[in-house]
Length: 236
Image (cartoon, rainbow, N blue to C red):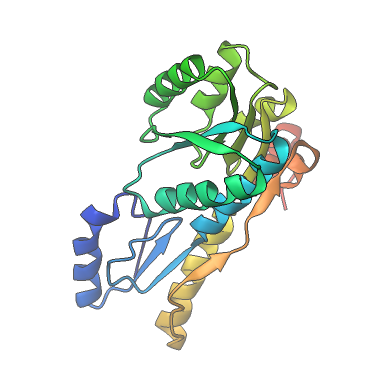
């Protein structure tokens, strides 16, 4: 068996197909390679992820607001579907709202910081930014450096310790949590059950995302673990 995250599915499709041809069952995690012969994918439905972020943003900003999306690569299935879901939902919730621009940061911190800073400087009336990957720190830094914290609504993806100060300062309003630990756990379980019990693979295994706010921030695994390590406790 093989569990992988196909960041660039076009480049990996032939590898996945060759593995399956050799009898090695492949499960994609976090993002899909839909044109390949993979056995299954475990992820949060990326289009649903984008729709949730679009609905949240639409309810937080004023009618007619202009917002932007910062993503990784539009070649990546997960990224392009989140962009599509957000772009389709946001205008329906925010009357007259518009997605002004979609930036590809290629999950590179320096590139994302520069592009986001330029966007914020040239688009003076931008009301919000949706970051569809975990690469949110350079966006938060750009917003902070330009003195726009709390003025621009920032909705991010997933959760890690370095995001906490930005939640506490009000720079990040909310984050769509993709349950990464459960994704990996479920992928391993599907593979083991297939190998040892001949259980069939589901074509898609979608998880329900969570919403992270300041009020429930410390209930999530990534933050609980860090807090327990700091205090000497044992995370559950």
